[in-house]
Amino acid sequence: MHSRFTERINCSMNESELVDHIAQEFSPLAQINRQGSCLQLHSLSKNTHGSGFICDHTTISVSKADGGYIIDADIHVSPSKWFWIALVVGILFAWLCFFIPLGAFWYQRNMLHNTLSRTLRNIVVRHSSSGSVNQS
Image 1 (cartoon, one colour):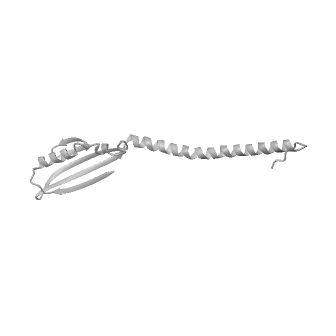
Image 2 (cartoon, one colour):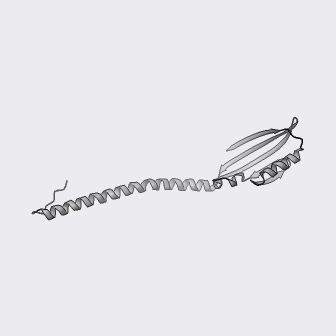
């Protein structure tokens, strides 16, 4: 997935100072590599919930514009291997969790039928002179 953000800033700093300030703002949040007026940010999502499920790479570039600068950020986000593992495990367990209650229902239903049938047979045997059982 690709996203792009653009901001315009009017300031008296030169381009190098502005890139330094941007790098300083993002340094607690990501691994940064600087290449001239561009910053490469890796793992910007590392401090968020579910960060193990995402891989991100951001390129921030600064270019001179009329009376200021344009800050352009390209963000590339993709699912990590842990996302795919969790998805597959989730699907497998979803099917398993679907069959567990169904299996429990059928098992208990059969036990109920057997118990009821056995109890009725016992009643007939105890209270009948002939001992024959009519099953329907």
